Amino acid sequence: MTANDIRAVLQDELGRIAPEIDFDSLDARADLREEADIDSMDFLNLLTALHVRLHVDIPEADNAKLITVQGAIDYLTAKLAATA
Amino acid sequence: MPSLGADMEAGTLVEWLRKPGETVKRGDIIAVAETQKGAIEIEVFDDGVLDRYLVDLGVEVPVGTPLAIIRKEGEAAAPTPAPSAPPRAEPPPQPPPAPTAQPAAPAVPAAGRVAASPAARQLAEARRIDLAQVTGSGPGGVIVLADVARLAAEAQLAAKARVKSPAAFNIEQMRMAIAAAMSRSKREIPHYYLADTIDAAQAVNWVAAHNADRPPQERLLVGALFVKATALAAKSFPEFNGKFEAGVFTAGPAVHAGVAIAIRGGGLIAPAIHGASELPLDELMAKMRDLVARVRAGRFRSSEIADPTITVSSLGDRGVETLFGVIYPPQVAIVGFGKIVDRPWAEGDALAVRPVVTTTLAADHRVSDGHRGALFLARIGELLQRPEAL
Image (tube, rainbow over all chains, first blue to last red; front, side, top):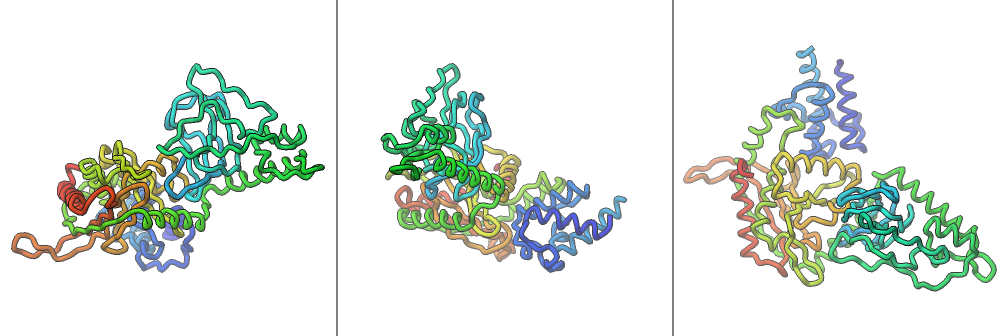
């Protein structure tokens, strides 16, 4: 799975939580919670969706690494590459 | 049409989920109504058999209007109304139990005979259109078939349009509903406010340890502990848990915690988590997640809207430190939790940095005083020092 595929998954799942946002215009290096106006429950639901869909373990201690769009793509790409 | 809180006056039936003749039991969802707050799933409050519908799809009716007749198992079917009577002119022989303590009187038009052609009457009966509301275009103002057909078509179209977009509730309507409830609150409820700052380290650390080896779907948020601690404290302080109606406070039979959930794009709703004080944390968290998901989809159950006995508003990990709540009538208290922040904290004679949270209480002076309010808020703080016991 390429970084672009992961980006598409992230876009899709974030779209379920915040349907009105324009994913492409988000600042990929800014705090997603501020960028997309999502709260802790939304963020947990996003992690849940990514975990279920990509079968990637995301320990809670790693939450901070997924707090930006770019951070999440990098993290998930590396995790998937490690398990492949 | 169940009363869904202080701010709702009417609802439009958009979907029947059960058919006449089917057995229904307490808690079953039998219909969906569209209201200012979005789509509400209407629950049955008694066991029995759905006898017949009294309201047609697409028709807006005031709160308190009987929607259907439910007869007890074994009871004879209710008589069908005579075809010559306008459908709502005849009070149902057995009104369905009202979900709240204050059922509004159903809107019953004066039982005078309206001039209408037999065909118009028949169609009106079939589509449950109130002839008293129809303007006749026939000779002498007589209602003819075309008049009723036009209304029926409009109602059907409106119902279809609504069913197609259940999530698209009207933000202006929501704003009006909030305005009505909050105006009433500020007009009628003599609020008093208390605040406290508590050490949140125990709660935060306990949640982190709990979540460490769990996949995201099994994790807790500190917000679930806030709801549980508030619900447990409310059990011991009944004057903060209940409803003030018609000049009388009635303590709630259980703690149905209304959890304030912001709606994307604007608006707010605080549906109930029933019996929150008795739920294990995992279950409470699952219910909060489910509630948030359904609020996002704009669809919740009538009991969730009508039942809260106290509101909990938690700002989560963003926002500000202190929340000054406005009580949602007819409730008598709202407990607020600000953002958890690291602050210097005196521990014995040393200074430490601790995650702390500001808790607030807005309560109704008609029911309680600051002394009890302070004890209530302090109890919530104490409970949060022992998260393992929640």
